[in-house]
Amino acid sequence: MCGIVGYTGPQSAVTPLIEGLRRLEYRGYDSAGIALGTSGKLYVEKRAGKLNNLEQALGADLPTVHSGIGHTRWATHGGPTDRNAHPHLDNEGKLAVIHNGIIENYAELRTLLEGRGHKFSSDTDTESVAHLLSDLRKSHNGDLPAAMREAVASLRGSFTLLAIHADAPETIVGVRRNSPLVLGLGDGENYLASDVAAFIQYTKRAVELGQDEVVTITPTSYSITDLAGNSKKAKEYEITWDASAAEKGGFTHFMLKEIFEQPKAVADTLIGRLKDKKIQLDELNLSSREIKDIDKVVVLACGTAFHAGLIAKYAIEKWAKVPVEVELASEFRYRDPIVNKNTLVLAISQSGETMDTLMALRHAKSLGARILAICNTNSSTIPRESDAVLYTHAGPEIAVASTKAFLTQVAATYLIGLYLAQQRGVMKDGEVAEAFEQLQELPGKIEQVLETVEPLRELTRTFAAATSVLFLGRNVGFPVALEGALKLKELAYMHAEGFAGGELKHGPIALIEEGTPVIAIMPAGAEHALDEKMASNIQEVKARGANVIVIAEEGQVVTGATHVIRLPKAPAMMQPLLATVPLQVFAYEMAVTRGNDVDQPRNLAKSVTVE
Ligand code: M6R
Image (cartoon, rainbow, N blue to C red; front, side):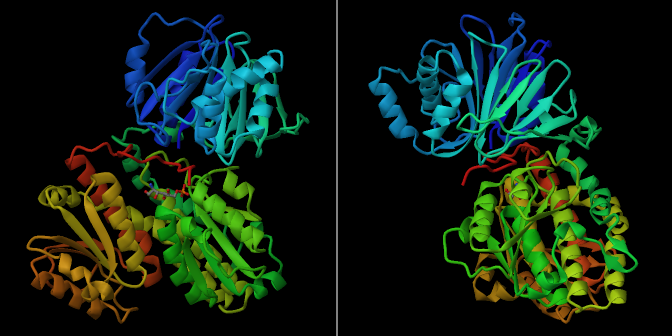
């Protein structure tokens, strides 16, 4: 949730720290701060609000020092104020700590440390770690890594921590538990960060850090140990994407850029996946016997990824004839799910760091299930803890509102559905190849949708003052309705709900008032018997005063609509990848019209690493 960056090397540290924070701001933007490795006492500046506030506060007379740590916050314990902003210091002002996650036993630590005379100056859980580390460092004769190892052994919760001390300011010590931290290896300089985006412009060499590993960096060295102090082997990897992928590239917002990247993103997800009429998913690592033994698929995910899972249910059940359950990851862990070695769990996550999904995955694993991650972020925690991973290759998604990740997640689950269908002998090779071809036509069709979205801007002006927007869909259009409503909520801050068309009469229709905007997603014409049902729903809401915007295929007969948004023709199962796009644009344009911050909507963070 928070973004963390540490730098040590020849540069003036403030530059890579601020640049890194700028690229990590998607993780949280309630406040930002830095500690520079000045000797004597650390130089610390922190400010509530976005990074710009910190930059203005820094001024021109900054000390030129070559190491430091920086933080951008999504508040959990303590409001988003200057005093609660990170870094947090010990009482001597010599040791600074930044933190992502939650220290669950912070209250008892605070009581203990206050009893020893420590004075606290914030309401955060993090500050107790600064005081604890300060005491432990003294008892370890100034050995900060040893102090960190001992401190972490007494912490509960999830965290990434970075610490720096004024007596050895070129050294930065970090640790991670259930929260991301990656090491960037430069030439005579090293980085620690929540995400490679923070240092991608300086180096493409990165090192994965494991659970409860303590990492120590200087400009020319790094070492990794476990909590007992044993050396751990580093797993180095090359970052495959370019720094420009994390830039806006001429678009006004990352979200708009990412919406327009969807044709390529979907094409990249599909590339190389069909050979000789066979779906190629070798990374699944399942024997034919294991595939035949799968008696249930369980999808675990949150938010938009959960909606991708809901669509996957329709496809996998239709194609592979395996029952699919789709679970909110945050609910799954706290009940008694029926999961065993014949269950295939799909853990869907763009970031690969979502704590709810990670915890659900671990729960399923402990029950014997086989875990397949569908993920967009290389070497993140969820793929690392899964038995296998299918990467979506959407490229970095920076905007908090997920767009290209969603479409590629749906495409990836479709590959899995077709693969299972083929391997289990439920679909013939020709049928699988035909469905794959339909998938391959989608990038071109998404392009076509993007060429026709301009009128949506005008539409948002018409409905900008609405207090509530309802979305209706049936079959695969139902999860699309849920996703459309989620986008509008998070970007436009409007009340929005998605409903299954058939449920309307069981309660939600009471919400319709004169002028209520209702967005109806019509299923594809020929393949569904549902057109007429949806047409009835449109009439029902129209009769009660709704303004109905219908998303329908070219040529589909639509009556009663105030506005019709046309999509290229596609088989029903392919429609979600088209119908979602105008809803993304609608939410985007509505946010712009209402003057909201599109890429950093209020109260949200891109990667939710707390439960
Ligand atoms: O990184 P993940 O895919 O695991 O994230 C899951 C949700 O937090 C995420 O999809 C969230 O709902 C988005 N902000 C929606 O746009």
